Amino acid sequence: MLIQPVVLSGGSGTRLWPLSREKYPKQLLPLIGEDSLLQATVRRVEGIAGLEVAAPLVVCNEEYRFVIAEQLRVMGKPGTVVLEPLGRNTAPALTLAAQAAIKNGADPVLLVMPADHVIVNTQAFQAVVRQGATLAAAGAVVTFGITPDAPETGYGYIQSGDAFGADGAKRIARFVEKPDLATAQAYLDEGTYSWNSGLFMMRASVWLAALEVCRPDIAAACQMAWAQGREDGEFVRVGKEAFSQCPSDSIDYAVMERIAVGHAQAAALPVGVVIPLSAGWSDVGAWEALWNVLPKDAEGNVAQGDVLMQDSRNTLALSEGRLIACVGVDDLIVVETADAILVAHKNKTQDVKKIVDRLKQAGRSEGQTHRKVFRPWGWYDSVDSGERFQVKRIVVKPGAALSLQMHHHRAEHWIVVSGTAKVTVGDKTLLLSENESTYIPLGTTHRLENPGKLALEMIEVQSGSYLGEDDIVRFEDVYGR
Image 1 (cartoon, rainbow, N blue to C red):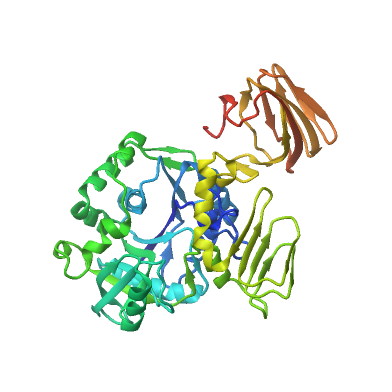
Image 2: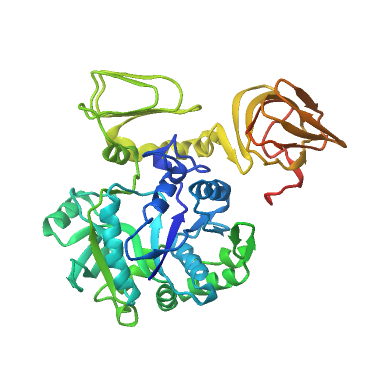
């Protein structure tokens, strides 16, 4: 049986600010271990006994495409990356994935996974995937219900109905939106409710047929967008105009709620099944959730990076650079990055999103981007800036090249720290080595390349009346930007 992993990578993770930013969200970060959450999601399905697992199929937006492709390449899992021209929620994203999966006459079982969740017990997860694969291959739509251990108000719930086969699988009785505390406690006491994990399994053809019944408007828009699509190197682009006409809806609202027992449309739809999952699952929706899943010391503290704890308890402190010293504090979240510091009470971490909203309203960049910005050719870090100047540390990967470009409002000085730089300035080409430099006058066409086998590291000093990233006129670009 062929299993097609489908990784949905669309969320922005604003509640994990300042580590997660709109243009570099939590699924791309190594919050637990060395893998990013996206890499951990892909790795979680490796080696499932008795199943053939295809290379991953990732659905994401334009912003993340190069970083995601690089993270898959590092893993040796290139897979397929389908680009959404704009966000339309999870139902259209899954529909694009299903269209990609059925080309060439295939009809695999889709294993649909959000890119930003944590599952601690991989063995337990793979066991329920094997169970779900059997049911999905026979035509069912399967989801996994997380066994609740508290009256959680931040999750949706699934009520289980009659048994469906063996091993605890049950018909889906109904989906319930996020409840208040009293209702959540009642669900916990009643015993037939589980948390909605956002994990699904079904054949690609089953999803497409169910969507035709439930949301023919979404099905038609996605089919048109797919038909207008094209391959762009390692990416698959769909038709922007057609996809922009697609309504926004989630998998739950579009289909899953309608296959529940008793719904008016259920008779025309496949059977909906929920399988219990106890595997240390978390959607890592806020800093408190991350603290819950990370290893702690005897006082309940989590310390990552350069951190000292003194007489402190149940605190998470995470440093990306500078020393954090926590003295006599309890139940705090302290997160340090190059351009922002968060200090929050552990019970108030859901409100971090309000800070991000205020940053956006004020037009501040800290809500969207890190100081260190990743590009397909490498990355740069804006280490200092002031009136009419900016200093960047730039690292270019071996064999990579920036676009052939020019700037209307700034000149640039380039100093090579290590590696070899091939520099085009106007009609001249230079090779620069360590401790050598060059000057790019304002308005001059130029390009930076790394012809070597080692990373090129350099310092760029910009000077001029305007230093924004939008002051770039590209003439040639191997990355199609």
